[in-house]
Length: 338
Image 1 (tube, one colour):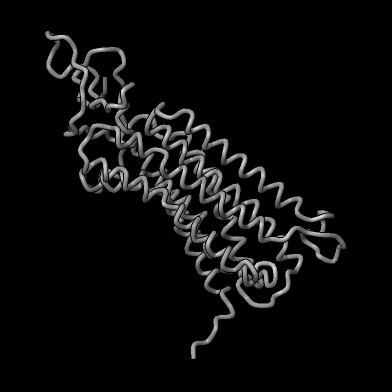
Image 2 (cartoon, rainbow, N blue to C red):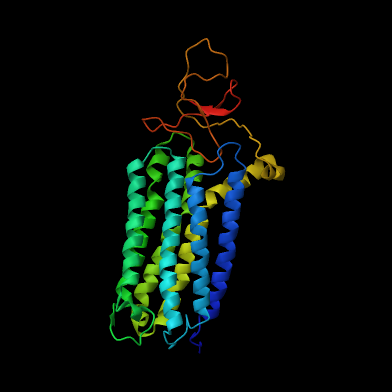
């Protein structure tokens, strides 16, 4: 007969330690990859990711500490220490995942230039409103407020389950929005289907968090009775998915940079990872190109709109959504577009 598991604490602690290590590696590789750019190295998405990093690490550390004080175990009391850990973890977790999502939105904005201003700001507004509402829900769920961390005070508290369901369900919606937002623009670009699929795959891999969000939502519904009746045990199942959600949100936004770093090493050798030399490559994508008038030197570009491209940017799109082709310019010596 199978023995029913009664203590998930050690597994949760091991998970938190592993995810802290992976999140640290992700931010190091992200900034290493960006440092290899010959021109503009760091953008708003990078600094936002760096701001999210301490929140991610502290949230995982608090979960690990909670795992040593009853999380994932049956019939463990909610001591004042545990309640303080729960409140702190909720606020820091929400802040970390909000910043990671905004970093993803900023990355899309840099990648596709000004293709979706409205969608970008809707995504930012949704994340900010989500964080503010959950912040007030956490901070003012008990009356008096002191009952939040000390149940010896007389008063009332809202049940945990409704707040957990709202948090999980809205996370799924926001994560799905961020995942699908760039896809219509990507598929309108005129480039080979194989490369288009590869770029789409990288973006989906980099932001595959909705799957984890759905897992957290499903676990919340499955353990809805124990979340209020046996909180440490009920939260143990949910926080397993919660730890994955915040860490993979953070790691996912670094995957495109890490992929480009690996591609640079594969094409130009390991030494290319230790210098910011610019490697110019011809593009074989078939896209419409604006040709200058006849009589110009071969290889020169016409027009004042030409600008350098970096390895991490998509070709800018024209007003009709058609990607413009990068070309090597004999005048400035850079890979430019017109």
